[in-house]
Length: 70
Length: 271
Image (tube, rainbow over all chains, first blue to last red; front, side, top):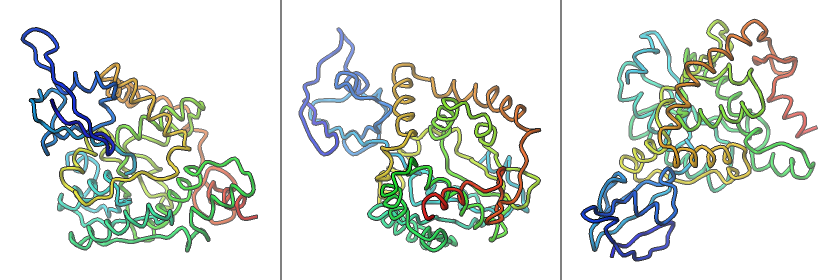
């Protein structure tokens, strides 16, 4: 299970392999949550990471919205 | 830095348009670190309560800590009212004017004026790849070749001293990359959006482009390539001979019409 925080709300999500021998990446997880990857920065356990990172049980993922305004 | 080296000469006087937001803070930081020119930061304070005051506080602190000269130009002092007040008048009069139209027009007007008064030869804007593509989409949808022709990395008329040349060194950098950079480097930067954002056409363009990018990764890069290599040169070629810059009959600032857009909007709101 990993904790996912999105726009102030947190929920726990179970990790599962997407196919035999292939672990779930954050990209797979985001797609399952029907979230547009282009709109969020991924912060895993306090570090900014790419969507190709594979989360582990006990990890904490925060989705920081890419905000407009220069 | 390579973009700065490419377009900025040793005798250039640089102004940087800043807001205390993620893109312009990054740009100001880069230009200041570049070391070949001491930039002056110009911030237009539109007077958007609860939004501009927060980013302005951050900006003042940032400039103080980095020994950067900051000039703040106020909507209220220069245009007569804050944007919040202008929007109340707009609503009372039932005028068909988006907040971004009023704000953007006045900001560009005041930025050019302030940069010129400071003796700047170039004014740097922190528009990113997403901004540029959203603008392109908006102008394409209205068939506005004139507007397209004035955009691009280097804009503004080189031969008109009244019009300070505009330069966008971050035009090839995505908004997401800049947001990521800001999260990593400026933890106290207020990451809030303008409260008037959602009424804008730009907001809808942003959603559309992000959806396309999400389903077809690389779309934004492809679109930027076509824009720079084909659309922009074609637009510039098509309007170059017909576009003349004169002085506004009301304020004397540069315009291609008898009355400049800023004066036209002010007249609609205040008369």
